[in-house]
Length: 286
Image 1 (cartoon, rainbow, N blue to C red):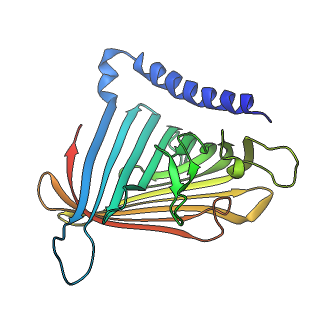
Image 2 (cartoon, rainbow, N blue to C red; image 1 turned 30 degrees about the vertical axis):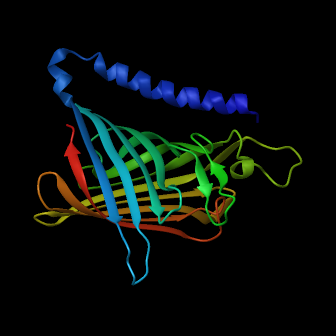
């Protein structure tokens, strides 16, 4: 498959989202309240400055910006839930240059129909990529390894869901996953062929589970677990487990502990773990 087909997949995915949004927007004015937007933006920073410090160490600064946005439509038997998470951060130690330490774009759209059964049929579409250029900082060369939409993981899933999205929800479905690359073909290329593939299509099973629970009056825990396996290799699973504990100090000030676990062998055979403990400002946009 060539890159023109991958562009077609991208266009179809975006068109589906726009079409569904316009379809629901054309309902009569009495149902406009069925749309419920949400949005939280935050800025986190961790800084230490040393001047003439004789006990060792270097000055450092770490900052990140995070945005969590949602747009949900629920009326009659239809639920259309859209969520976007975007994060970007950088760090600097001593006289070194700033380097990326957080870099993510994740968009998820889920359309479900409630029949009154124990489970509800759904269709979902998700897009995962990076916001800015990504680099490997293991050596002084700082080799670039990714860019916006390079790679991009686009997944469509059709199946059944269970639960309440505001507390606990899980879904399981048959999935198509497209991997699109423009320059960094190691994510999409099949080493068994002489041709360099810029597009990869995989079929399999996807499971996504969300849980939000209040641990205390000012302490919130949220977690999202996404699993994907291919029909041709059912004993190998991609795992993405995103955990966030938020302690609310006051209206605008939070302490956040985020632990992200990723296991994806097309990136590395080792399990990846990212942990961040930060204090930051948050603002509810909606």
